Image (cartoon, rainbow, N blue to C red; front, side, top):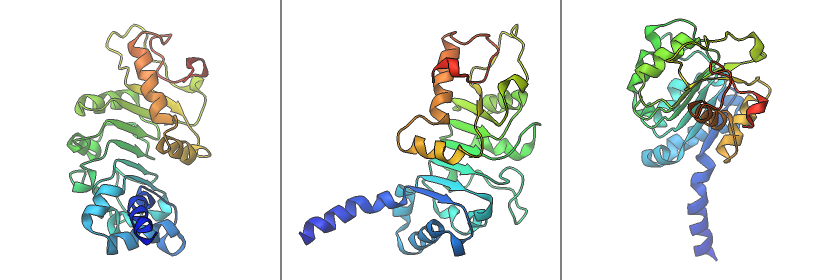
Length: 233
């Protein structure tokens, strides 16, 4: 029984480190303390192979420089603080760091409405396929899509009805099907993200399905870039 228990523990132990939702300073965030202990006691390969998903709230942003750089195998990162501006030490985030080498899904709680050199490092992310912002203009979104050739979708998160969003010209021939608008409020944001990690349909999956519909010509009018209930996704 002890041998079996030891083997089972070896199997399930990595599962405890797959996802970290960091909401508060270390003094009041149990998960942040778990992450800290893991980095201090586990081999670097264990950290790289088993910490996949990070959700960082503004109050836990101090963990960025202290712990997060050790998590070099992160696949999805949701950062609800200043990311392309500056960290609390007023230093730009270096997207060439090893911690970004496996990142496929990046969601930044930041509004991007004008072209800026601060996000030019996105082109350095070798695995990035999905990118989301708290509102991004269409022109800037298209520029990023052209810069990052592996991107499959870029999402503009909105908190108001699509009727208030700008309509793209239906006569434009080179409209970009990978630019998607999604209504998602702060009330259901984290739960939607966790649903995706459990294999359910999250905002990433819905955006992928919508892009496929646009490519097949199933979205009317052609210039509609936001998901509606009638799309059935």
